[in-house]
Length: 59
Image (cartoon, rainbow, N blue to C red; front, top):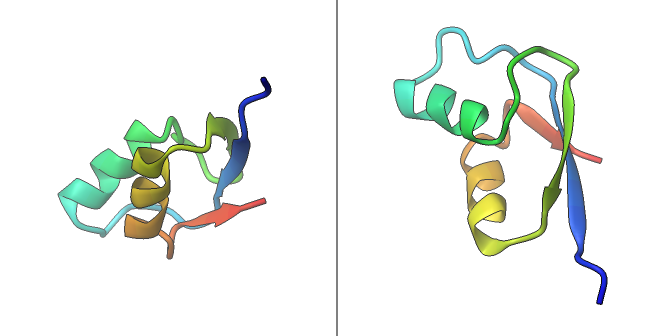
C-alpha cells in the first residue's frame, strides 16, 4: 500500500515570529526559504502545517 505524501515549501522567513512557530518550521524539516520537503500525510503533520500556514505552501 502506498503512503500518501504532502510536499511542503517554506515561502516566508520565520524571523520575527513566535518561538513555537520557528520550532514547528524546523520540525517540518524546513530551514531555508524555497526549500521543499516531502512528508507523510498524517494528522500530526497536518496540524503543524495549519499552525504555520502563513509561512508555508502545500504543493
